[in-house]
Image (cartoon, rainbow, N blue to C red; front, top):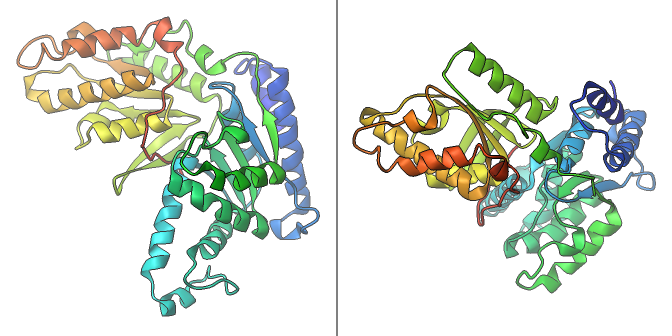
Length: 381
């Protein structure tokens, strides 16, 4: 199996990536770590003194953090590993803690992940063991802390994971010292930051440019009519954005509901119009998408009319959500934006959406960094 560095060099040679020495240095670190894992032929062979440090990769938007982490994850052979959006990890952790607290002691003793050295009424050690059983390697995308409850849990939970031997790779827009900045009772969170800095190598991915902004620069992002040319153009743009990544399903939690999207890669999502606008979805669902994906691809937008007014309303809400978050939008449609809802009841209200669709095609809009919505839990397993 080829390692992360070989894969990175291959993508550069193909022209899918622009060579960048800072990126290459980060990949070298990840490649060395991957080879160390491979050489042990199993996690259980890591003794405590030899246990390798993980990596905390931070830098500005679009510098390639997620891409490099994916290269490491996809090209490191290990049975128990997980790549997860940090929002999802915390959501799953809260659910696991709640489930443990709902059990009586008799049921807790039956759990295969129970830590026999820990008190039954303290869920954290048991949940840490459960996580470790599922993933000896944890790759966190978009590591950030904005919630006081998360901040209070993380210290003990990560101490437990590290003590069990979990290897952690994380990407973040912030250096460790800026995590939970200005948060309530932040002094309680500071020991976790120090532990993170001791347990992980910190790498500032100060790449030369924002590669994410260049991925679609100068290329059309709105294709019509719905023919073979549009389908081919969508595939070409999609492949350019995901840069050779493997597509995988993503789950997003919204108020106890789970939305499942089969086609996701990097920070891109590909769906059809029917997937998002012909189902009973609303603003919260669309905002949750923007919390997780920087680029949304939508195939097969039909021409709309009063007979499809509900679908049109959902599409308006979707475009508003994408626009506010500065999410990039690539789509194929039956007609040009100005002809999507040409007449009839609701066409006047649709005019703002037409304006936004036109603006979202501009280079100025595509150059804007995404804006993360507040208080949204989005996820990817």
